[in-house]
Image 1 (cartoon, rainbow, N blue to C red):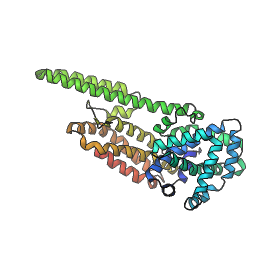
Image 2 (cartoon, one colour):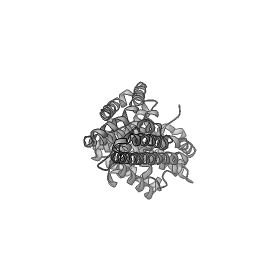
Image 3 (tube, rainbow, N blue to C red):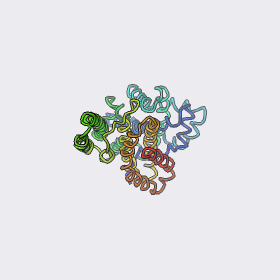
Image 4 (tube, one colour):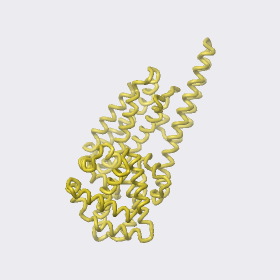
Length: 368
C-alpha cells in the first residue's frame, strides 16, 4: 500500500489531539483545525524543497533522528509546562531547515488562511514540526533514517502533498518558492482552482447581464415579451454550458437560472458551486480512515462556506430562493450517493459522520 505522509500525520492528529493543541495555544478549535489542515501539507512541501537542496536530505535525516519517539510523548508534553520548550525547539528546527524567510512566509500564509495572528501560527508550526518529523522517523525506521531514504520518501509524496493543499492556501504560498519542489502537481492544482473560479465568475456575470436584458425587453414590448424572452433564455443556457463545462461538470449541472444571486457583496452562486466542487473532490479522495482524517479539515471548511451562504439566504427574494434551489437541487443526488459511499468505507463513519450529517442538513436548507 502506497505511503501517504499527509494522511499519516493527520491520523495522529485526532480531533481530541487538535482540541488539546488549541487549548494549549489558547486558540479557537475550528481555526486551529483549519490551520492544521493547511500547515501539514505546507510543512511537507517546504521539507520536500529542503530534501532537493545539496546537503538538505542529510539535514532532514539528522532532524528526524532527534524526533524518534516524539509521537509517543506528544500528548503529555502539550498539556504541561514543557509545551513552551516544545514550541521553541520545533521553531528552531524549522528555522535551521527552511530558513527564517520561508518559515515566516509559511506562518504568515497559515495565519491569513485560518484567521490567526502571525505569532499564533508561528507557535502552531513550532508545535507541529516535531509531529511531522516524528512521523517521518517512524515511517522510515531507525535503519533507514539516512539522506537517501529521506530524499526518496519525500520525492514520492509530491502528488499527495499537492492534492492536500487547500486551494486558497496554495494561492497564498504562490511566489514564496515553498511549492517549487512539487513541480507541476502544485501548479496544476493552483491553476485549476483559479480557472474554475474565473469560469464561475464569468458565467454568473453573463447570467446576470442576460437576465437584465431579458427584463428590459419584456418591459418595452409588453405584448410580445415571450418572443424576446425565450431566445434570450436559450442564449443564457448556451453560455452557461459553454463557460462551465470545461472546468467542472458540477457547475454545469447546477447553473440552471438567469437570476443574479449576489447579496451583500457575496456571490452566492459562485460560493455554492465552488464549495460543492471542492466537496466532490475531497470526498472522491477518501479511501480509508486515514484519508478521512486528512479530509476532515477540508470538509469543515466547506461547511463553514455553506454556513456563510445560509446566513444571507434570508435576504434573498422569493425568485432568488427559487433560483438557488434550482442551482443546488440537481447536485444533491450525486452528493448523497458520494456521502453514502464514503460512510460505507470501514472506519470512515466514526471520523466523518457528524460532519457529513451536518453538511447534508445545511445543503438541504438551500434546496427548500
